[in-house]
Structures are given as structure tokens and as C-alpha cells.
Length: 224
Image (cartoon, rainbow, N blue to C red; front, side):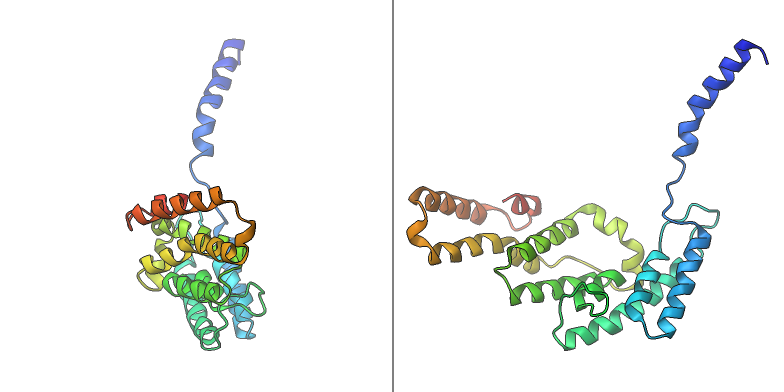
């Protein structure tokens, strides 16, 4: 191969290679998906539902291999069954939120399995038990901000198809969005002698802005 031909060949590789690299971005291979699914079944047979659910979730990853993910439908169905059963049990005990894998709360069971309306309900019930918890309140605000975005429905289509239709509750959203202002109001009542008058005036103006926002202005409410 002469010098000119070699240069042209290298240029061709540089031009074409980005397109070949960007063809598909996979989470897992088909073999890995099958392996996660099989592990989930074994764990489920041993009564380890929480770990089995996590394995089924991993088995739902996007696969670039020809034919796609061979166990996607089965993994979705098994995750849905485990999540619905255990979520209902946790809900009966009013065990709403617990990230410990040995004691998942209703929220975790429902969220991981795709029962998003039930997960939202469980999260709000947990928040009502401790509404002054600022960290938990921030977690809930981020959760519902994510829910309100257009991409959520698109990215969760397979899960929703395997469980039940989903539409975010405006009542849940409004409750979570109002918590920061409500917590400030309670704090001001407790520490009124320490709060400057200007702060109270600005807080009142903020409240007026909130009252003037349309209920459908999700982004505006989150920014507020």
C-alpha cells in the first residue's frame, strides 16, 4: 500500500468510526440479561423477594444484540408480581418508606416494579408522618419533578405497560411543592422574635407569587 492510499484509508476510518461507535449504547448483553433473570428466579424460589426484584430489574436492561433483550417481558412480569404483592403487605403495615433491602417500604416495592401511582401515594404517606424533615421533603420534591417531565413516560413505557396506567396526581404534587413554604411558616411561628421584618415581607411576596401560579404550571411551581 503506497503512502497516499494509506492516508486515504486512515481518513476513512476516522470519518466512519464515530458512526459505528454510536450505533447502540447497551446496558447489558443478552447473555447477561438471561443470567440476571435466572438469578432472580432462584432468589425468588428461596423467598428472597427483595434481592430477586433487584435482579429482575437488572435483567430489564437495554440490549443491542440482534433480537433485543430475550427476557425483558418475563423480567417485567415477575418484577410486577413481586412488587405488587410485597408493596401491598408493606402498605397494610403502614410501612411506607424504607431503603434497607431487608425491610423495603411500600414505596420501594412499588417504584422498582413500575407501580408508579402506588409509589407516589406511599411516598406522600411517608412524608406526612414527618413533614418537617427537610431532607426527605427535598427527596420528594425531586421525585415529583422527575415525574412531571415528558421523558418519564417515554422512558418508563415498558414498566407502565406491564403494570397499570400512570398519571401524576396533582394533589400529591401540590402537597409536596407547598411543604418548604409551610415548614418556613412553622419555623417563623416558633422563632418569630428572631426573624427580621424584611424577611417576613419577602416571604409574603413569595406566597403571593405562588397563589398566582396556574395549577398546570409544573415547572413554575418547582422553580418557586
